[in-house]
Image 1 (cartoon, rainbow, N blue to C red):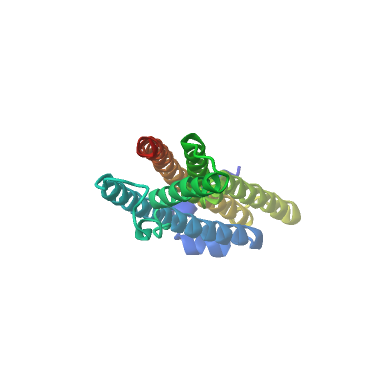
Image 2 (cartoon, rainbow, N blue to C red):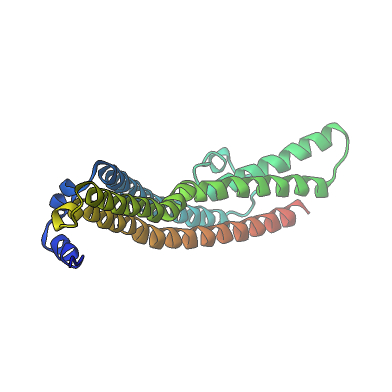
Length: 234
């Protein structure tokens, strides 16, 4: 009576390249595709990690520098030209919105500090939305890899099992040589899907937590910026 237990033993004793060569064409394509997804996922995770770390350092440096200024409304243009820094982008939009409303009010002969502050606050909210999208860029693609990799691996598993049974049906024998290619491909596809998904899900959750923290930080900074503009406009 045939037992399938020798197949896992065969997989354990053989190297990955031998197992890959034994797979069918479809399983080979699936495994190669998952390998590419893994490379993309690791690239996104490392790139996003260092990007968020760099932006956080720039934000804190700019906030510290801004805190030392006696007034915000009359700062030189050098403070408004650092839009690569999220906090500086909020500051530039807020000040521009404030003075734009002031110019319109002056043309109409109306001096309304409340209107100027509202324009500044609206500009800040738009900038927050823009920077939040910047923080979250590439995260959707990483989430798609996390969700899709196990299903792609499962597709390879089902296909490999189907090939194994097809080989047995064609040759009417259930020997290890007939089952090995299909079962090897099925198991390798399963492993490949998990190897892609497991690190990706941990990396995604870590990046998602960092992103949420930075969104909260930029919202707190925006609130403090609006308060300071309100105090200076009185």
